[in-house]
Length: 326
Ligand SMILES: [Zn+2]
Ligand SMILES: [Zn+2]
Image (cartoon, rainbow, N blue to C red; front, side, top):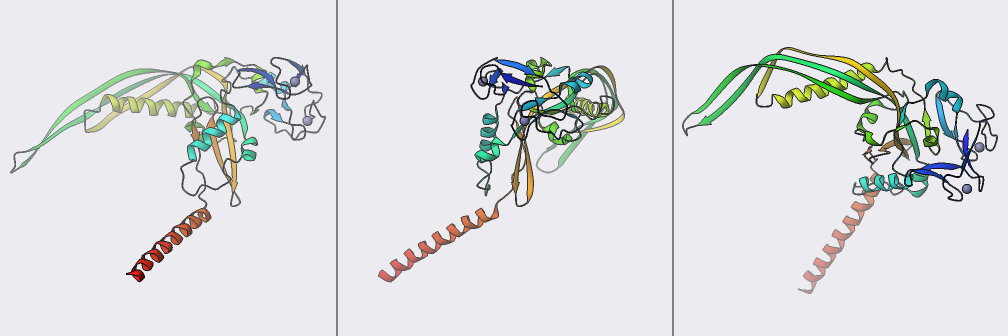
């Protein structure tokens, strides 16, 4: 299916700035009608054959650029929740530019207008886990004090028996469920503000591409557990920070699964091609957090050094000129 404008026949897309459906051709708001897909692999607008992957939910027709949503697939793997895009392509591009603006020897066409226009907004499938975690710690902790009287240095070590027991309720701990997306990159996109989370609606997909999950909630549960364990471990270290040395005898964290929700979270993906290699950048589609490592253009560096060489040469010329005069 796709959303067609009743006024001009253009493609109606979800606008992150206006937070409503806007026709990309005439700018009409909420003027959409749903045009169903005639067959799975044909564009409902121009009829072209679409090469959609097995897990594709929404994509852009490469010929007429209409955003298509494969609603048949929604029946089986429909998300419960969606966090709508809050950043437009333009804003995401500006943030990307601002982030790397000061980097030395940044290639000249990094974030060029054409490459920003090709940037895609992606809804990444996530499972969000509610976990109740119980940690019990039993061990020894040292409090070390050193002082000097001018002649000798003294060290006093007090050893304490340390016991801690606590429970943490984790709510909506996100783990990405897409094999195509790098797990570490997706972890770097956190945190998201969940207050803006909405019940899923296909209208949010119009203008963005998405895949359904390819790892189920059972398969990736260990990653949620690991995250909870890291947070709980950090909490324990904060709680026991007065001990310079902590020796655990027994440390156990148990997790109880309280609930799981399937959600789409927004990410802008920018691919920059340089020196025959692709560099990927991700921007949190809600908060604007940026991740990625731009390449270094040494040619720009050499030109820069060349300019420096020239100015040193001119300075020397100037100097010798004065010497000559003297
Ligand atoms: Zn229109
Ligand atoms: Zn088309």
